[in-house]
Image: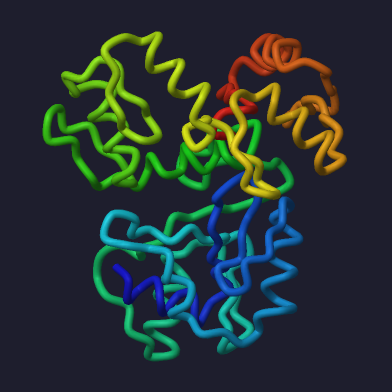
Length: 265
């Protein structure tokens, strides 16, 4: 699986990225872009040459799939262009004698078209790229819970599931794992322990107690103004998340709703 991913990243316009927050982070230089098109321009302009092995440094035994923008698939060895990963893999194997092994490609595929945040596997739509990322990972889950066989793509997600669903400890802090005899003591602990606050600023890494304090921090420390909630399907924009949610469900009820602040933690 890793061998196939190495070959595809090296010889095709398969652009790997990380997503620690809400932007696409370049695996080669750690620059980030919120717009996928700008990310692809960065990859083409700044990384015409690269050490392909660097793209995999952040992976481990539990996180094996490499996130990859496969929107514009072209061969780096000839002018051939493709729409499907399977086709360009066959091209590299048959026309350029590159080794492609049977089985999975080792890539978590993303395709970004005119309609943003659409799953490349099932075409479900999402409000934001973080929601899309969380959903896309569900198509590549390989770690099974030993208690109920539910599967996860990351060990950390499995650990949280086991703690919350199967643990006999009723009042455990999700961040540090400390156990408390009552839920009040656990909440007091979270309030007093900054390292256990659930939200984090993607610009300076400071942790925040709740989403409201995160917005205030972004405004006061970084000059960010809350942008409101723009509908991903139509041109309408809303000041409040609830207004946007009500509109989205009523006007676009055939499209999968995703909370715009999900995974903002």
